[in-house]
Length: 220
Length: 204
Image 1 (cartoon, rainbow over the protein chains, first blue to last red):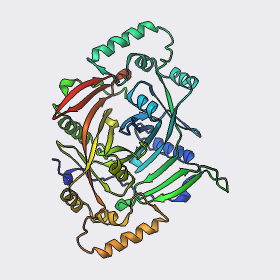
Image 2: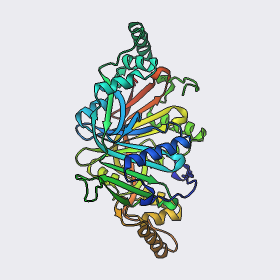
Image 3: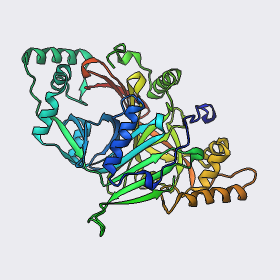
Image 4: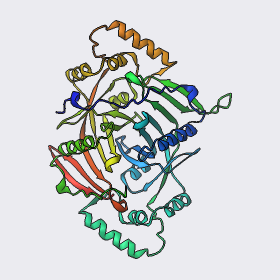
C-alpha cells in the first residue's frame, strides 16, 4: 500500500489566477482557442493532447489520449482507425467526453457531446498531410487487435511500403470524428482547492438577446 | 518525440501483474520530475450511458486498485453511484508513455477516507465543507463565505464531511502504452482472469 501522505502533494499553484465570467469570451470555442494558444505560448508539451472518453452500448466507459487535429465552430476533430476500440464504441454509442489538462497553467477544459464521422473528403485531406511513415502505419496496424508479437507489425509495414511506392491512399477504415459540444467547462485551479469552474451549456434555442450558450459557475 | 530514444516494450520487460508494473512506471515518472505525475483523466457515464471525463489526483494504489477522493455528491460520484464502471488514463508526455485502466469503482471504507482526510491541509479540509461540488453557485463569494463559516465552526480539528470520501477503482484491464517510431507504438494489456492476469500485445 502506498501511504497517501508520502505521495507528492500538488505543488503546482504557480500564481493564484482568478477566472470570472468577464474573463471569458462569449463563444466557448473561441475561448477554448485562446486557452490552447496560451498553452502553446507556455510551451506545454503536446498542448493538443486530450483524453477521449467513450462508452460501449452497455455504458461501460473507456478512455485514452488522442490529439486534437482541428477545432472550429462545428466542434472538435480527431482521427483514428474506425475499427479501433474507440471507433467501434463511437459507432455503437455516438457520444463522447474530452478533457484537456495544461498543468503548467493550472487549467483544464472538459466538454462532451454527440460525435459523428467527418466526411471522406475531409479525412482524405488530412490523411494526405500526414508523414509517409504514419500513412503506412495506418495500413499496417489493425488498431486494438491482439498481435502475436511486434514482428507481425514490422512485416506488414514492409509489405505496405512495397505496395505503395508513391502516394499512400487513405485506408477506408481510417478517418475523422467530430464532437459537437453541448457543454464546455473551463476550470482554473485556485488556492485552497477553491478552484474557479465556469460551464457553458448549449441552449436548445437561441435566447432573446441572441445568446446561444448559458454560462454558470460551478462549485469546485 | 523523434529526438528521444525509441524505447521498446516487450512482455518480458513487464512485471507479472499490472500493479507492480504500474508502480515501476509511476516511480519513473516521479524520478523524471513530472509535475502532477498522479493526475488521471477519469471517465464515467451517466444513466443514459453518455461518457464524460475530468482529472482527479490518484492518492494511493495497492494490489487491489487505485484510490482517489471526491465529494460523493459531485457529478462523477453521481455517475459512479448509478454505474460503477469507470476508466482512467494517465499521460506522461515527457516519457512518451500512457497507461489506460478500466474496471469498477467501489467506495473506500469510512476509516480509509477518515485517515486520508485527516492528512490533508486544513485549507483543503475547510474547502471540502465549503463547496457543494458541481452545484451551480451564483458567485465565488458564496464559496468564500462557506469557507469562513467552516473555519469558525471548526477552530481545531476539521472532521471529514459525511459527503466526502474515496473510491477505489478495481481494475479489469490495464494497458501500458509506449510511443515508438513510425506510429508503431507498443501496447501491452493485462486482462484480469479470476485472480490472475493475462498479458497480450495490441496493434497500435
